[in-house]
Length: 376
Image 1: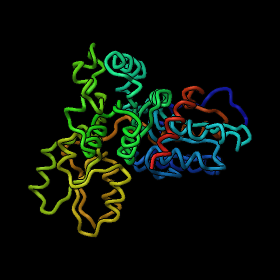
Image 2: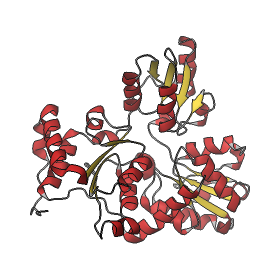
Image 3: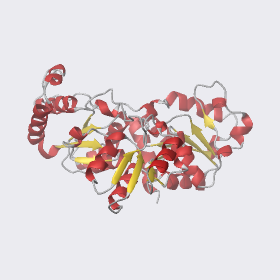
Image 4: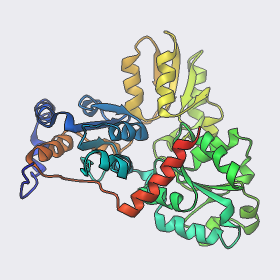
């Protein structure tokens, strides 16, 4: 590959029409061939999804790309933590050895595409919380569990401290794994997934204190509360799913006879408790796909995905659960200009917005991820 001295400037791409951008994206993909995989998360805009080689949830996408023998460049149309996971999985030692020492380059088209939930738990905050907890309880009996929607540094923290990663699909199995080994769980960064999953396992709210990292002492909890805990929840949430409210559910049930409420477990407890079905993004998609014609749904998850399901299933009646526009604003930053710019830089031999996790962080993160894979 010829190395260009400078990356192609981004600004001119803003002036191009979507049609022109799409033509150039297709041309870049043809030039790069099978060495390139474009990954598109379910919450992406349709015009971006149209160019994705693989679509799915964040972990599923990273795993599929990592297992590709031909892939040498990943352009992840998602958010920062997703690209980190792709780098960790694609460049684990055995994969690099299989490729004769070659790394897979992972590109995030817009580096401002972060995740508000992931940003609510910084590694220094988690480390400080762990130290404070150690003054009250034995942390040797505490398992840290981080949601996949978190920075690589938090995954590495879990790897170092006997902890594990979970997804929204396997959170229950992961918590069961944790309780088989230790008395308590420290769950971050999403309090709602941790709470909704634990409630189904018979753990009560009074056994699940919420740790607020902005409180000076014990996350705003008393010593007795921490001592009596089973699951310590981090005060974090998804800005999209946090917006759904119980009144939205009641409103649909009053207006539309026979409607079913389908929500993501990142929704607050008061929504999750009264929904007909609660499940991961994959479960939401699969539930709608398997439903008979004429089924009526109000779905509580990201707007782009709900609208896509509505287009794909005209035989069903599908509504967005909230009366307010509710989309993942940071995911929305990935658009055709950024995708085209990052691809044409690859063609030109430059790498822009490369995501490369530090070696020690990657190694410990991989340990936590491998523990998750061992859970059945």
